[in-house]
Image (cartoon, rainbow, N blue to C red; front, side, top):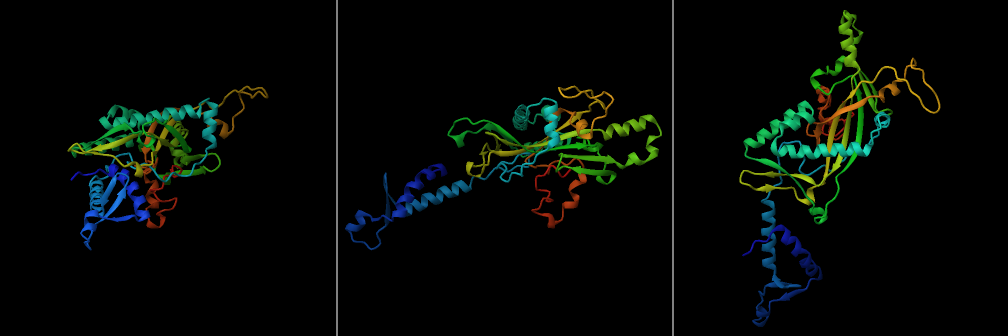
Length: 362
């Protein structure tokens, strides 16, 4: 007997369901003629009749065949089902000031970041070390390459492709939306350069300005300023500023998992959200301490110091790098011990749960 695919069954079932609702149960003509009390029931469809036993058998076979195809599962920086729970969108005043001051259009920046994400998915297909090391955070790149090597040892691999089945083959655009942006002063994107959290004074202005400042406690120790070089090094590290942006991307580009026997595993459209969350980072260029400004209303003396907010907005983002995808590294905290204090079960489901996507928890 022909084995019907789940797709074929989805085409058949709606037509059967109308008959079930109307309860148009007929008797098999041959059985009626013989007046048999055990006459099999049949159901009328637009294409004829089908017995209840045959229908149930077809349905069971389709169900078993569907269950026999597992969902793709691999420990890589990509959620095959997409992200269902999108974090609440937050605004960052200082981030918008940086874009305005440097004449960076938000739409242009988002387009650039989306292209980085596309290239990232394609790099997973071939384990492109050059791209991953250049455009991903160091720890994230190393862990990704290790995951791809483990996948290769099992004889599996991933393939990037564009899926337009949800729109009946019609292309739909890549879209990006900023979920959150944070400016961090005093830390580096190179996690090994950052001290434990206990060795910083921590100032949080995330709710108003969207920034957080880490001041090393060793700035208070006179022994660290025995030479001019030592003092300059401490202050240079303290003045570092970086930007972290969480971007929601709606993309037709997906990954499928290829098993050793050549079987392709793709998450069904019913379970796929088409949403992914990508964390980007960029270290910023340090602006001059003083700046001469002219505008139509006033002239600012070159000797007048700018306010803290004016100084921060002058920072210029440099090379953007991917730091996490779909919360694979729990937002890849800048200080590695950041999540230790939230491991207790009492925090599960709250904003302190390490599985909750929140880049404001540095």
